[in-house]
Amino acid sequence: MSDLPDYQPPRVWSWNKENGGQFAAINRPTAGATHDKQLPVGRHPLQLYSLATPNGVKVTVMLEELLELGHDGAEYDAWLINIRDGDQFGSGFVDINPNSKIPALLDHSTQLATRVFESGSILLYLAEKFGALLPTDHAGRTECLNWLFWQMGSAPFLGGGFGHFYAYAPVRIEYAIDRFAMEVKRQLDVLDRQLANHGYIAGDSYSIADIAIWAWYGPLVQNKVYEAAEFLETASFSNVCRWAEKIAARPAVRRGRLVNRVTGDPAEQLAERHEASDFSSVATAL
Image (cartoon, rainbow, N blue to C red; front, side):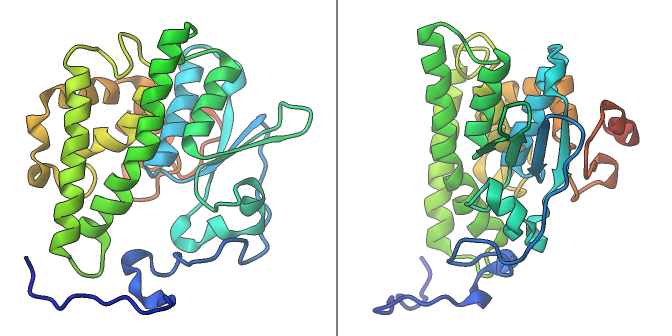
């Protein structure tokens, strides 16, 4: 353990905006808009405002899966919200999501446009709207939602916990990395045990539970985020690795992970998506 002196919290905490690492410019302890900016609207009923973080990828994969299943009403416009530039604090985005987090969806097919925010809520909304990727029997639906909400509760320990302290924090803190590495490995063990006897997360059928969980844990075990696969020994979770590769090979997943992507290999970046033909610009990545 480090010999750094024990931190003594002050009686009243105050914000030091220089203390946020790579995201210091966008993290703050208050909510609400910081500037006026209206959001663009395309021609499709579904308007997505997002970025290809794991939470954003959940929704673009879901929409591409619905289109793959033949649900033409799932056509969508995907507009880029660059969180490093603070786009999520524009007044138009805050009107859709007062929590200022991507992704956010506006459904213009309803009498009054319906706003949907929080990635898990968007997945459930779309699954119910189109009657797809969510079991209809009571037991199957409940099991699927068990895992969907497991992901929503678990991912902050992976992203904001392990990912932040291992990859993004201005200093590496041994205790923090050890604490969150332990939790991430426990979560991977939970998934590995579940997948030992099931083809997919919630049973024998692909569902929104797989979409939600793969977006976070698939790239982790495939060493596409944090460069931590060796550190976490993710290869030892063989069932998770098998499942992750199977999901990653799906055509809709391959398309969805490219949408609103503005980092990494330029050949895998599709900043905005408005028509299926937009993928022609990244065809080599599909």
